[in-house]
Each structure stands twice: as C-alpha cells, then as structure tokens.
Amino acid sequence: MARIDRADVINPSPIDDAADGLRRLTDLLLRVDENDPSLVAVADELDRIEAALEQNAGPAEFRDPVSGKGNALAPPLDMERLPDGTVRATGSLGLPYQGPQGLVHGGMSALMLDHVLALAHPDEFALIEELVVRYHQPLPLFEDVVITGCQMTDADEKTRARGEITVAGHLAVSAEALFRDAPPPTT
Image 1: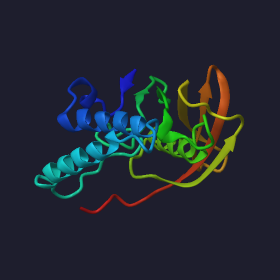
Image 2: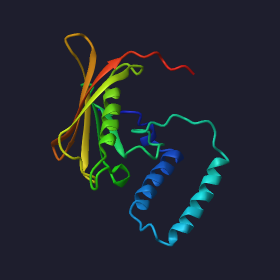
Image 3: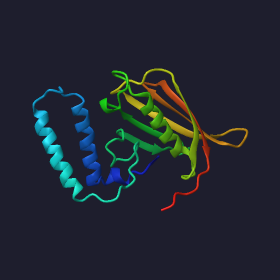
Image 4: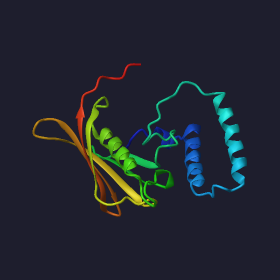
C-alpha cells in the first residue's frame, strides 16, 4: 500500500502542526458557551496570532481542502492507494463537519467522495464532469469512516469511478463519477 502525498506525514512541517492545532481549536469553539467570558481573551490572542502570520504571508499556496494536511479545513483523514489502484481514506469527522445535529453534512460527504474518486483516476489532469451521490443512511459524527474509490471503464469507453463511504461496515453514501480530459494548468 502506498500513502498518497504523505511525505508530510513522515516529516510533518510547522504548517501541518499549525493547521492541526487550528482544527482542534475550531472543534473547541463549537463546544464552548458563546457567553464564556474567556472568549474575549481568546479573540484578542487570535488577533495577535493573525498579525504575526500576516507579516510573513506570501502568495497563496495550494493546500487541498480534503487531504491537505496544511489546510485546517481538511478533515483528519489518512489516505492510501491500494495495490489494485483503489484509493482508501480512513478517519473520523467531528463538529466542524456537522450538518444535521450529530451527523456529517451531506456536502462534506460529497466533497470527500469527489476527492477520493479524482485520486482514483490515473490522469492527474482529468476532471470530474458529473458526480452522482446517493445517501443511503446518515453518516454519524465521531465514528470511524472508510471512504473508497476505484476507477472503472464502461461499454462506451468513458472513464468512470465508483466510491463509497461506510461506517461500521454499513454503506452510508455512494457516488459515481464521469471524467473528462482537462488541459494541464498554466502557471
């Protein structure tokens, strides 16, 4: 099994550590009483941190919103490519990804499947043209999930991929994607 984009897992960078801290802080902010008097001091400290970071900020770098460890919005997922080409992600989603109370937002499920299906395509410049998502059962927060995606080719030779999110071995969300070629990005 090969990890995907995981040099940063072996040697986490300061940006990875800071993003992880921001994920934990976001989770705490979603659980604290909005009238907690300590929030004034927290807001002041965050303003100080923002000012310090702004001094060294440069042009935006790409940090993937699903598997980019340096992106505090990315869910805490571990991704790997299996020998058969299947992409698998595992993890647990907390309060920052909540939709209905106690459940993962359906849009987050679609985003994660979109990403895993794109990784399952061998051409990094292919784009998903169509994504069909089916919600089979609610996806609970704080439960271990497994997200898988694999490429398939149908009779008309169009490249497609199929994926699913399972929790406790039960299918929660499935998706199929149709790909189209895209020109390489210009720099």
